[in-house]
Every structure is written in structure tokens, then in C-alpha cells.
Image (cartoon, rainbow, N blue to C red):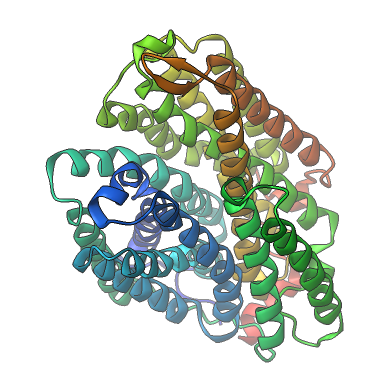
Length: 490
């Protein structure tokens, strides 16, 4: 039966479910960017090589990509709150490991555990769909989905401040404390969803997906260091394709697949995931180059020479804009449909990169352009889960949103590789050091803007927002008869 919340009788405690889930999502998202300001200093602090230090970012991407769809499926089958608690426990354990050690191996292991907690966001979206009354679903999932960008924007300046004023282990102790707080809040506030997806857990499908993703993402993220034409990179790409084909064939034949490829191949789902990949690419370019660009010395002719703290603060207005715009995106989706909201978001992101392309000499205009891109990201990240949820059965919400979150991560990985390649190959000598040219940064803005426009093209091919799919103008979400039956039978 539907919960009291879904029946329209929320208790005072029930009103805290969305804030608690959003806080969990924000903490998890902060973990993804926490070490970025630390990376240049890791070799001196730990005695590790720069290549080994890079794994502090790579490992979170790999574990996040693998565990997000897997734990989403496990949550659909065995209980979303239960898996949410396990994910937060893993995050807390990973934070403690990083806090107590300076050994690069332990740090990489801890960061891997932190990355695995990315599944918190699709699990939270699924709990919201199951538990809240229809009129509260859209604005709540908009906020939950936006935490992925909000946390990333906030994490950079916070980590920079900690780096400048405290021992670097402090930020991991703080993240452990936040993880423990999340655990206590979920235990106290968040109910277990009654909705379950029947079937047996698909272990072969999970292993196949893991092998495919690890091979692909390793080749993308480490290809610049190994050489794009090296045997290692090409071997991983080839193995990833081969495993992916075998995995897809198996998934189409099994009765309880890890990923329902028939559902995922529907235009409404497939094009939404393509758009998610492109939006993830466009969003991450903004985060990657803003701080580096303003830190470039004035001798380059375009650099601001800002400190690491100032460079992190340049992204903070964008994070605040994302908080403010998530409910606006929900209202746009309710009134005109999530397809329209995603199309608008793509245009806004492209416009933000146009601003950045023509105003890269002024700190305030750099901040303005970065904020416009973040504003578009907020609208996009809020619309994507609404598009996914209207196209999949209610029992597959967490798994489907996990796959969509995975596509954003793949987009970010591709962006990281492209940005690294562009900035490494278009350089000149200024003030006795090698630095990227201004044209390198401008090329990144062009590529990211093109990705946003490609996301717009994918969005325009989505099925139209018909009134029965949009819900009423007041923001309600239509629940199909099949979904109602699923809830009642659960």
C-alpha cells in the first residue's frame, strides 16, 4: 500500500525526508571533487608519483560508474533505504581510511569507497517517487538531482579553504563526520519504500557491466598518460567493446537482467541517456577549466594570477544558482514538460560558453559565464530524472536513474580526457613556465558549447510532452494505472 506521505498525510517527520535526502546527495557530490585542489600537492605529501596521485580521481570515477547502476538495481529489488544506508556507510568508511593515512595505496582505496556512494542520488530520487504525494514529486526530484552539481560546485572552494588553513587530513575527517550524520538522519527520518522489483539478482550481468565500464573508463581517463595509440589503451578499448557485446547478448536473454536493454532502447530512455552524457560533458568542462584559468599568472597575457581559494570561489555563485533554480526547473517541467526544460537548459549552457568565449580576460565575466553554465546545468539535472521516470516502470526507477547518472559520469570522464589533451598540446612559454595558450581554453569552450547543442538536438528528438505525461499545470505528476497497481500490490 502507498505510504502516508504518498496518500497526502505527511507527518512532521515526513516533511524532513526530502531535505535529508538532498543533504545526503550533496555530501556525496562534494566527495567527488574534494581532492581536486589537493592533487598538485599529493606527490610531496605522500611520496607518490604524479601518475599515482591521479588515481585519487580516477578510482572514484570507476567505482561510481560501476556501483551506481548496480546498487540502484539492488535497491529496487531488496529495499532502497537499506541500500542507501549501506552506501553511506561505505562513504564514511572510505573517509576514515583517507583521514588516518598518508599512504597512497590506502588513500586510493578510501577514495574508491567514497566513489561507490554516488548511488545515493538515484536511490534518493527513487525513494522520493515512491513516498511523496504526486504534487511534490517534481520539485523534490529536481532538488535531489541537482545536488550532483551543487555539491561539486561547493566542494572545490571548501576544499581549497581547508587546504590553505588546516592539515589536509582535516577535510577527510569532516567528510567522515558528515557521512555519519547522514547515516543517523536516514535512520531517523527516511522510511523504507514498499515498492519492490521482482526477480533474482543478475550476477553475470553485473560482472559483465563492471568489466565493460572499467575497461572503457580506464582507457578514457588514462589514455593521455599511456598514449592514445598504445597497446594498453587500444587493448582496453577493444576488450571493453567485446565484453559489452557479450554482456548485451546475455542481458537480452536473461529473465531478470541487470539492465533492461529493451526498456533502455526505447527512444524516450535512450535519447535521455545520450543527452545526460552530453550534459555531463558540458557541465564538467566548466568545473575543470575555471579554476585553472584564473590561477594562470598574468605573464600569460590572459591569466588573473588568483589564489587557489579565489579560483574555488569563482564556482560558488554557480552552486548557489543551482540551488535557486532547481524548483524553477520543476515548475517549467510541470507547466511545459521535462523535454522543454531540458531543451531550455541546453540552450542556456551553450549561451554560457558563448559568454566565456568572448569575455575570458575579466574575472567578473569569467564568473558570470561560469554561473550561466551552472544555471543551465541545474535545469538539465532537474529535468533528466523526470524524463527517465515517465518512461520506465515504477519498479525500475532506481536502476534507470542509476544508469542515467552513470551516463553523466561517462560524459565527465570523456570531458576530462578531452580537456587534458587540448590544454597539454596547445601551450607556450610565459614567465619561464609552460602554460596553455588562451586559444586552448577557447577551444575547450567551443567543444563544451557544441556538446550542449548536441544535447539540444538529442532532446528535440525525444517524444513530445503530451498533457497526459506532463500532469496538471500545478506541477502534479500523472501516475499510470500500471504504476498504481504496482504500488498497491507492494
